[in-house]
Image 1 (tube, rainbow, N blue to C red):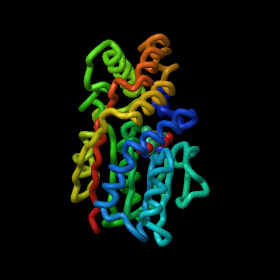
Image 2: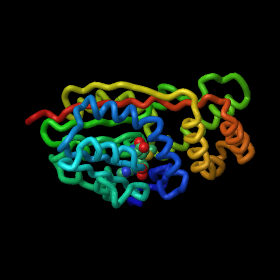
Image 3: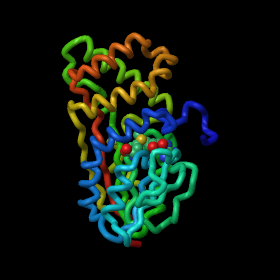
Length: 268
Ligand SMILES: C[S@@+](CC[C@H](N)C(=O)[O-])C[C@H]1O[C@@H](n2cnc3c(N)ncnc32)[C@H](O)[C@@H]1O
C-alpha cells in the first residue's frame, strides 16, 4: 500500500474474494457500454491500448480481441490479482497516481472505468493517463456520478426499499471518507478539456433491475460490511435483513449513472 493516510486506502480492496464477484457483475453490466465506446472511437487492429485500474479480465480481453496480433494491450492495476498473467494482454502492477506513465506518449487508447472516482489524487492520475497518449491518441474515462442518482432502489415502496437506500447512503459515506468524489462523473467533459484534450464528448447510462444488480449489491455489501458496522452506520441485523431482501429478488436495484467521456490528444 502507498504511504497515504489509512482513510485514503481503496475501499473495495481486490484482496477480498468479493472483488472477483464484483468484477464479473461489473463486466456483465457495463462491458457492452464500454465496448460500444471502443467501437465508436475506432479501436481496431494494430492499436496500442492501456487499460488502467483494470480490475477483472473482461475489458483487457475485449481490447486484445479488437487490436489482434499486430496490436498491444497493457492491463494495469494497483492489485492485478484478478487479471490473467498468461492472457492475450500484458499485466503489470501499477499505481496510476504514484507511478509514472508506462511508455509515455505511445498509446492510441488509454481507458479507465470506475477508477478515478476512488483515487483521491485523481488530477494526477488523469495527467499520467494523458501523458501516456501518443499525439492523436484517445482517452476514454468512465466514472459513476452517485450524487446524480444516489438511490439503489428507485421504487421506494416499503421498508425493505427504504432500508436499501439507507444502506446505500451509508456506503456512500464510507466512500467519501476514503477520498472518493461522488460528483466526479459530471465533471469529466470539463476535466478532459482542461487536460488539453480536444473533440471531447460524453454519454451516460445505468441499469435498472435484474439479477446482476442484485449480485453486485450482495458482493459489495458483504465486502464493506465490517467497515459499515465499525463506523456505526448500521448493524448486523439490518445488513442481514437487507441481504435477504436482495436475495429474494424483489427490490429492482439500480446503480449510479456511469458517465463515459472521451477526447483526443492534439496531433502536436
Ligand atoms: C471499482 S474497480 C473497477 C475495475 C474495472 N475498471 C471495472 O470497471 O470493472 C476499481 C479498480 O481500480 C483499482 N485501483 C484503485 N486505486 C488504484 C490506483 N491508485 N492505481 C491503479 N489502480 C487502482 C482497484 O484495484 C480496482 O481494480
